[in-house]
Length: 222
Length: 188
Image (cartoon, one colour):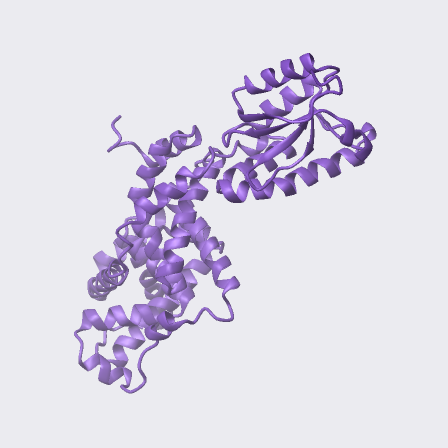
């Protein structure tokens, strides 16, 4: 073996030594290092040097002290979070957007909801008939001005699929919001006050509903 | 299986189902190392605190997407690395604050003079700290975080061959610095 080849082999072994020391070396690399350690008198000294680097690096890292209250800070931030986002493969674009929205802190989330709502409305405009997948988004301003509505706030852990399914099956429409507090204006397709009250009760009974406040009733007013 | 022996992957499975206690357990297991990794990347305790918290919030949000192709620790380090780089990019113009400036060696003493005041272990620690970031990171990941060549490649987003090259030069520089300080170790 020439000097150059020997040097090259030593370089290779010196490169692998940190991984030998941290126990992650395996296969032919592990065999090569063990063979080198067993056969080359310089190898054990090299191992000692690598161990000194190991100690020095550990000491340098452990000199950094995380804040003592890190866990309590994290716990507070975690409490403000909704549940984990669903796996991407099983989620529609809307559900994914909702998941991301629900994953940010509550205050930010409800502000971001305005952006999400704008996206939903934009989507309704580019689709014939202005319809989303599961529920209708209100379109013309004239219709909105006349429509009976209620003010609704959804729970932070509400699922988009549940809400959209409910809205769609009951002919309900998001016509405004959310406010900074996360309140949506929900159009209620009620012909009279009794129907309006019945539908409000239905909305209030949903597990994803946090608050329902009576808004404009149908013209027979009750 | 008790909580004390539950594997990281089992805990991530619980997190994916919305178990907040599981994410707190993972936080307690891994936070110090993630914090230190980010602190070494950014040179800022404040950024390390914020980013380390964000890493575990990301774990909470993304647990259902974890496919288990890597160790949880490697996954967390990868998230930490990405977030640290993003934060550094945002602060590119002014991130060398007082804290970072304080870490710059005082030029009043030459390295040799400084080293004479220290023992070899302290000198080595200083030399590790003084390595270029890309070299120090592979040293940290191998020696302190126990990552394999492949895992370091995954965390840093670089090929295995590049990991080895960086490790080679990192150790070469350490050897040269030690030699210059009077501690000849015979290689390089």
